[in-house]
Length: 439
Ligand SMILES: Nc1ncnc2c1ncn2[C@@H]1O[C@H](COP(=O)(O)OP(=O)(O)OP(=O)(O)O)[C@@H](O)[C@H]1O
Ligand SMILES: [Mg+2]
Image (cartoon, rainbow, N blue to C red; front, side):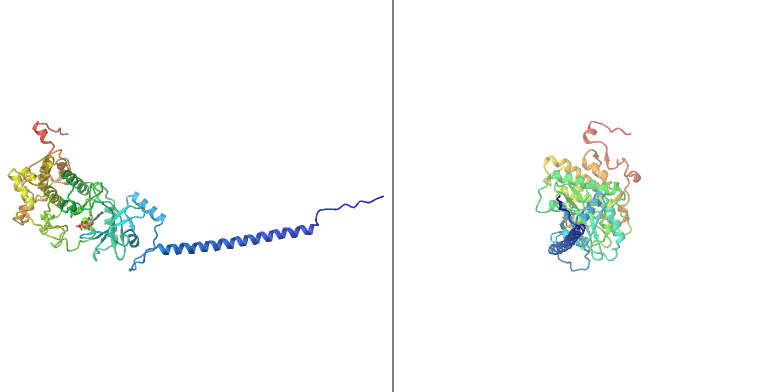
């Protein structure tokens, strides 16, 4: 008889438990190592990022106005959202400092302050106007209200306001950049390459911009400072009126205006500004536009030296007065010819001169509204003969600015009845006795 002994390969139950415990412990150790190394890596990355940011950050400003700001995606996203909603964006002083590269490119200076070239982080060019601070008027709410009005006023012939800055130390306005600068440089400067035809189109565009401010936008805006320096030209030389709404926002410095209490630039100022207690209406812009039109026809400055200088209305050589004298003698076309305007443009130039004579009428009521000026310049109507202007040069008194004998229906100024200034016919239509049907 034999007995067989069998070997059982499975380990005893106690051994298995020890192995499982070993595996769990090793896993736990690995997990702890992973967590610790992740933490260390994040800390190191944070240190590198803040070092890099410090290296590219702009140098600190001397004043204490700086707020912490970065050109980050959410900021720009918010900005474009506001723009889409057609609301002006509020910028900080440091943002403007960065946009203008420390105010390194000065575009010019005027009665309200200095203008600098700048660029948004997305590459859009801007013009930043840093306003002279007026101690009496620096009330934040009022500033915001006015900027809100300007920022919501959009028209193809008005310079767009992108945003503003208002803090304890500075106020500034951020405008779209107009690459061909202001009209005065092209009219009177060295660079007189613009053809008369283009200048005429610029006059019509400018008139449309002012007509919008006076007659179409929600709240009427009187510009008070229409002049070639405030007509800016884009890359196609299309005109846009600049600085509307500024007269309400802040006072100008003393270099531009020497008559106490006046707004605007001498030489372009309507006569009513010279008289105390005479109401100043939107028609003061029509007068200034008339002077601008004379400057386009004559291609010469009528406002003695512009900017700070006084007007030279009393000089014998004053072009607007000469235009009236030649018109009275029936020699307006001869005067236009003497202005070196090419033959093809002379009819338009003669018409512009006539419209200018209407715009500079002494009595504000006798001046046409800007919508009528647009129509007359466009040439689809027959311009009525203007009465004599410039009486105020010889007799200063309110009587001169009162309504003339001919009656103008004041209430119908914005209606279609502008028959005091023009007839709804063209010279050709009247030649053939064609009349426009009345409704
Ligand atoms: N949006 C803009 N784009 C390009 N250039 C501009 C812009 N705004 C102003 N400028 C330039 O800056 C200069 C100064 O403008 P500013 O409006 O301060 O003075 P001004 O028009 O001569 O006088 P005012 O104070 O009566 O308006 C102008 O000559 C103009 O060419
Ligand atoms: Mg200006």
